[in-house]
Length: 287
Image 1 (spheres, rainbow, N blue to C red):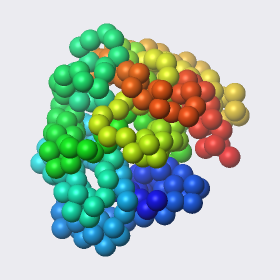
Image 2 (image 1 turned 135 degrees about the vertical axis):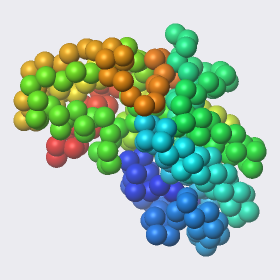
Image 3 (image 1 turned 180 degrees about the vertical axis):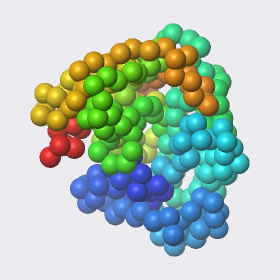
Image 4 (image 1 turned 90 degrees about the vertical axis):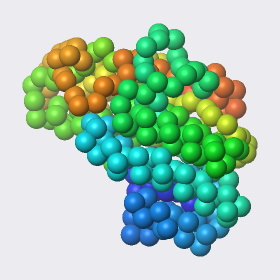
């Protein structure tokens, strides 16, 4: 199988490329000089050049707060770029898998969000990703859309790496405790997505690891697991705070747990609990 990955140097894209090559699939990951969502012609040019069986669109504008200032750029990448990828994939006879986010939901309910639940994004990032999904479906009704959340991994910048850095510098961490979701390790996301590709699935799916946590819970686990693995940490206390105590330009959903009932029976292995995956990622990062 030949797969072209956009955003192949990002945290999920990097994991996908590594995993595809481990499977002996042909993975192509054009760099920014070759494929830039701010240069739409480059998207079609690369997809037409490589003629993949699948395109996995991992590229996205993900700076949630900065998106409030750079609305045009966020839409050009998350909506318009996604449309161009779908259009070019269709023209090249390729299938498309598009990565989306829990931020399309508003966080107003207290049960896990199902794929068919109404979108209600709270900020520019979420709206641009939701409109990107719509653009993809308009161009390719048989596209595969995978929504995930709270992504972290050994590659790229993420919450886990930020907490590790701060825990090495500060005796106390203050972390929001009233936003709830589920962390997702890039390796688990990549494995689930490749399973869907192998099955040639279409439509929308949700995937994160199992369990539920607040950002505070996640931070506590990072410190505890890292210390147990021998990381040199200064932090002695993690203090829960309210969202109002840590104001940000973008409003975030208070509840963004995703329902995985649709994807779970399709996977070859049970979905791991987020804490087990965190432990494995920290072990990998340390080695």
